[in-house]
Length: 401
Image (cartoon, rainbow, N blue to C red; front, side, top):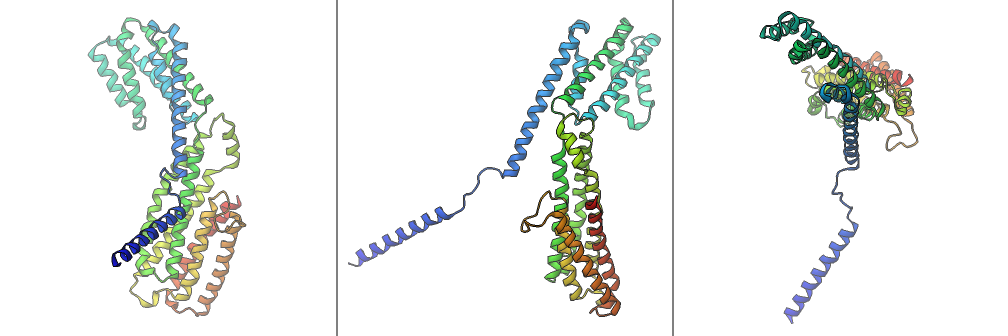
């Protein structure tokens, strides 16, 4: 009888476990095994860019071969195709034109140099030495790549120049000009490159990093964590330079990609977007964020007890930093942030500025009347308040424009 009872209890326990597991499986959230949607979107965009890039390269090569092949020596327009591939692979249309100009000038200069040395010295080792010396000594150091291209073109063309001077000069020059023209045309007319999304992403990452740091500092001050976290905040503030460098590069490339771009979306976005103003405002804000972090780190380890910040100030300043962090993030966001669907970025920014100004008036009055718990820290109060003021003033001016 005992065995039967024990068996029944065991079966009931197994049934309960199975039922519980079934309920957990039904109620458990679905786990995604693939990449996140944002990452998947970026990977898809990169694949599409590679396809477009490959198609443009193939079109430029075949078109150049078809145009230059019939009249090139022995039907081999290698120089024209090489030039076209170089131009079509430029990162922007503007780069295509500038690279084409430099490439054509360098190759023509190399051909003329080869013709001159061949007439004077012939296709000898002395001619090669003269070409090398001229290429090394002529021109400033910043044009080293152009001088090397001149020298290489001159050395390659040296032998042909000795046997057929005018033919070896005219044909390569025409091939270079034709290849450059075809490469520029294909790059400009077949989905010319744009880097607007990359620039938007870099600027938003910069604003998000600064906003999160400001909010982290505000939360830490509110929880009385100044001493253990101050140096970590300073380290994060210094690391903002990496985000600044990346954003600056992306903004410059995006602005350059809009120059001479034939796509309608480029003309529309150029009217709507000013990458430089947004980035310059955030760069100014980053200086204030770093100043706040540095002041807090210095104060956290100040040995003078009367220089330590009072709790009343820290509470107010913590709220200000959190408002400023939300304002910085809202400055670079296209729409309302999560948690405040009814407030536009402009309204949130204005609210943060008004709240900070009101706090500033209150704290200034308290400092003037000497009612702060630690009046000896007045210079620290002033530094922190000035940085917060400048931070929001920079955002306000940029947003107004």
